[in-house]
Length: 606
Image 1 (tube, rainbow, N blue to C red):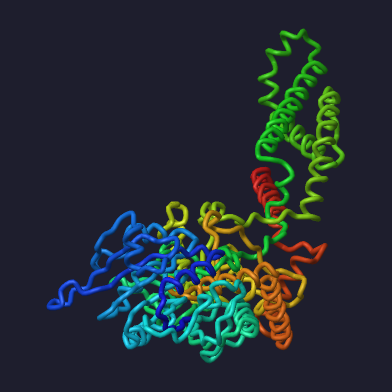
Image 2: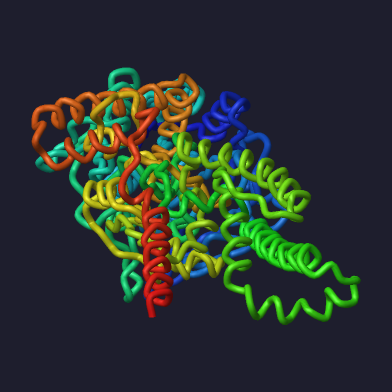
């Protein structure tokens, strides 16, 4: 809080001087007169006057009242006035002049007037003791610009400017000691043994403290970033700021529920809620032998196979009748049924074997009268077989990757996936519960809460059909420090943002109407626009990745090392040997053929 106390016998001259120096800041003057209406009941009242453009050598009160547009008396219960309430959403500031003679107003009454973080307050009284006691009674760090004026017959001091910070655009915090509350949120804040030891925000505060003249003390937050209890009380860093226990929070996310309770500095960084899952595997499925053709095409092939078998069967019967009996066509048709009864098994076997042999590229004995049918079938099988072998070779050599969910819509549809949620004291879980989209609320029912981010991520990386939900920055950092065997290899698949219309805007949290809001916003904007925040984030990521790589390589027999090595070999290897699972269908057909042959053999014997 920047304040001075001056003594003068010419208040209008002082106010006119201040008015002329504050033209660039556009802080018009308003007069608030504090007085006791009833000394017995000690009731306090305010008299609010309209602003005056200039101050003459007449008394301030006379000049203001003569020029006012409206005049009203308000007790403390009706503060702030409507006009001041509306002005809190505007960027310009007010210079608020509060005069009192017998008793100074309470600190709460003063804090209810205007905006304590941007407005300029001038306390005027003829009694020096009252002004001095008022300054002592004001809560520390709650009003940014304060000036006390003592009306005295003799001019002790002249003022030519309001506190220098008002007219000076450069940030300077005058050696203030800022109390900061923080929780461990890599890469933003790294804490160890309740001490801030690193992270992007640590570098920001350290750099700002050296350049903008302040120091800071960091204390750990015990209840996370902030949540509201059933009785309406806020805990965590939001509660620390609301109840004025700390000046700043090391980092804070902008959420609708926190709006109006605390202030957030200018936008600093953006994060998002995402999920990760294991890399899509490129494995040859057990049914690869059926993959070249679609189900409908297989149906047509079987229909064509059956039709060709029947055609060969009847062609052989008719040819046999014509060659043996030499009778007219009518007689042939009459004797067909009798010939079928006599040689049905022989002709059926011959037609089936001929059709299948051609399909398998084997030689087949062509019966008389069936050459045209066999040549037609051979040409068809040549085309189908070439296409089938080409597709089968491609499927075995370059198998397609399995489908994995990459959006929240796809994850919602894949009910076969296990959903693990990294749960900690933050607003993320609440965001799912209060979402207007039914899809998000349905996912909550599938959540498996896991407080350990490392366990959540490694489970998603190594186990099939498992996802881990968390913030992008923390998940990338954890993955880098716990699953890096080769720097260029990313062992997981990252999704898009789960809440596309609600990104995680992150900055510095402050008390409501904090006197540091303007300065901290300027500092945040400087470091953000200079590219320092992104640069520090990349530095943190590379540091964690290097440490993680050294840790994993130090134990070649460990579980993580072995799983990562297997994952890398499976994913990077260009060619892979076929496994027994790739021949299940072939062996099944083989044993089915043996079974059928055994059955026919038994039937022939008996």
